[in-house]
Image (cartoon, rainbow, N blue to C red; front, side, top):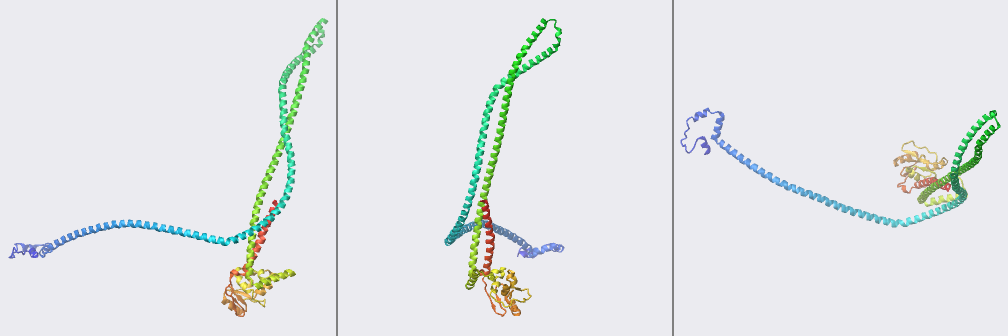
Length: 527
């Protein structure tokens, strides 16, 4: 109905009358206006309005839904953040729990390991302590015996040295006592000289005022003498004036006057004589003081000489003490070195004995007894030309031990052998070290054997060249084609034990014992 009403048909207009000018307006309308009219007639405008309203409602509803969803999401995010914080705290606490559990378990494991180590240590200690105690007591007993011998030797040498030192000491004491008496005399002499000097100075203090007075009096007398001499010269000048007197009375008068003038001079001569005595006494006292000064100077020179000699003796004594201390320290160091070398030598002897025992166990009993019998026979009958077993006369690289030991039992009839020229085949005798004098014996045993890389090469060489072949592992292929060998225990190698014995003998008994002898000689020189 709304569609028809929009086209102009309605219940209120049953006659369907079209307004005037409506048709003309339709013909004159533009296309856009006609489109709008068609939309209005067709009900499209209402649809679009409703559609727009619906879109608005949908948009409003969507916005409300989105807001609701966003709000829900925010709330959920808040909850998740709270849960995240709680989860972080849970993880931290879980880590702490695991750390504490690990620490507790680790501590328990460490305690268990310590307890186990203690138990093992106690077990080993209880097992090894008797042996260790026995070996230590044996070693201490041996060291005690050696120290006793050394102490006895040192005591003997010390007694000899003590006797020499006592004689030297007596000589030094005699010299020292003489020097002491001389020093005491020299010490007393300055005191005596000082006393004499003091007395002389007191006398000098008493004499000096008299001396000064006499000197002053001497000056006055000398002055008067000069005046008298001047007058005398005047008289000598007047001597030829006898003709100047007119009478005897005048001459006597003049002579009396001259006598009166000379009397003071005569009295001054007497005083001059006493002054001369004083001067002589002063000169004597000065000479005596000078002599005493010379004596004091000589005594002081002797005292200085004695003090320098005493200082020199004291310095020599200190030097001897320092040298004695140095020699004492050197002796202690040499004793320590001697003990260390003795311990090393003893340890080497123990290792040598152990290696010899292992060597004896590795050699079959029959062979061992036979070798011992041969040695005894050669020693008892002084048989020359017997150099010993081959194993004691050769030396080679350790990797050839198996090949050498397995080959040593093979007997070769012809010593002259032609070896194949191959890189994987090596004559065994070329890898052995021995003296040239033993070449025939070694060729007899090892000349017919070559070292091959493996069993295939050994089989080919044995078949084509007629040689006994062996590998580094000890597998043998004889020239007749038979194969022997298998597992070779390198730990029980006879050559290995013999090598240890030789090295121990060379290194310990020649080097260490030589050093030990040098140390003993140094100790002897010090003593």
